[in-house]
Length: 137
Image 1 (cartoon, rainbow, N blue to C red):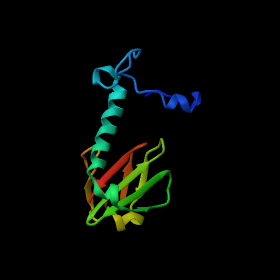
Image 2: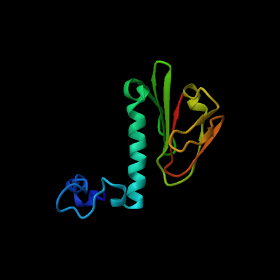
Image 3: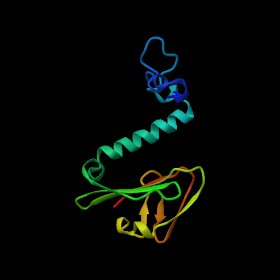
């Protein structure tokens, strides 16, 4: 969980800590992880559980748009289901003009899967640095 690419690819592929005789901590359990590791674990678990039950992600077609100012937008669609992902890949806040994405945004408000907050999708979208939004339609 703490591999550094600068130390080589092998360092990125270290065994997950826990379950081996010489492991000093057990990251399979919440009390064996740091607060940051627990945040990463909880985020990844939530995302993987959602993905497992989302046919649009697993079986759908992909429509993606050119990256604009470090922001990437794509849609996965299957039957009447659609998932739209909006990612700000920069360390700066972004204001995204939603006009080019209207064809994949069927509502003017949607709930972000990750945070549970309702977001306006009318004209412009304010994104925090490195923010990811996931909408299910």
